[in-house]
Length: 518
Image 1 (cartoon, one colour):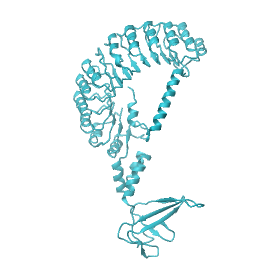
Image 2 (tube, rainbow, N blue to C red; image 1 turned 45 degrees about the vertical axis):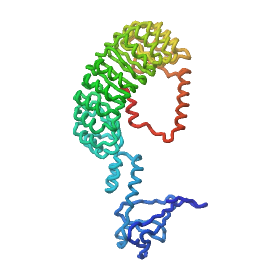
Image 3 (cartoon, rainbow, N blue to C red; image 1 turned 120 degrees about the vertical axis):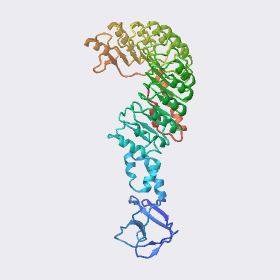
Image 4 (cartoon, helix red, strand yellow; image 1 turned 120 degrees about the horizontal axis):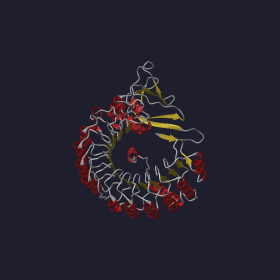
């Protein structure tokens, strides 16, 4: 195919084609011409419509107007049938598939046998999400059908909270998936060990992300089989799954590529299994041990850890701060309801991991002004602090924190009854300075707020109450000079990387799933 332009004329498309069989082509006057192997030429003017029709339609070449015309069987009975070369569809259809919807791909299968074979080979869908608004009438029959036509292409299957799902909807398809990397079957209550056994048997070469939160019928047998085979897993969620230390030990021994592990309300896990996980899984960047009430100590060996969630680990003591010395990249630490922690822990933590951005100390009632002063002195990057129900902290210590760390953007003081109107106004005066970046101040249930106080809040730094939430104060976000410099440096770095990238691509569904935080 050539596309050429002559000066002073519009563009024209010139097509050279050859008949590759032994038949002759009938011309309009009835004479036989153009034997097999002869090069034929046709041209089309700019904006002229060219339609490629199905194979059982008849095309003939007319030398008078040099074009391809459609001729019905009634118009001419002696013409020889011509069909498009099969390779045309095999090349063109895969190029079109990324630009049409799943429903359109299904319809295209009815065009002819060749189209159906090509689309089935390439697959109808790459991602199936039960929450996708594109499928308003999502049901079990539709799910089975679209999965059946997507064995070769599907890489993401999200079925979270689909309570109608039954194992027979999923089990027949699992052995046939070729590319499935991301699977979310959270709270699909009918899923049992049978599903995990099939996953471990057939998907171990491709599966990287698995969410199975709330699967009450899964036991140690299924979890151990899964962990032994699916060694490529990078993200795993086991929240509210009734597993014991046997499963935890198997995870730590075999899933050493894990980058994110979410475990909430796995009440039976102890240090016997968690120590194996935290020691062997050195690539972890996110670790959630929410509600591991039998956890007494921590043995951390993950230098890349960014988020550590220890909410409700009641057994932890002040000595656990010593194990955090290797967490040089830790940015977010959640210690809510760790009731045994005191000022000793916070002082040691401030010296050990001063780079923390987000610190959650909700219900840690033993901490006092000593902890706040230690945070102000050492944690130079602190961005948000949650001190809900911390009733031993004074307003003066909080005002000093805002003065020393003006980059603090979020301060939560829910139900801190020791704070009064006078103390909060002193905080707002400190926050009203130009360099201070405080944008959220939560003082709900600290004391009763009247209209006069609301006017004072507005006059001191422009804080307003969130609609229908009394005591939740907010204002437009402000950036410190330090944050602006960091952002500018990051933009320059990204621009440099983009300049080197030959094939920049969009974030995949796997990246989006990985971005979810428990």
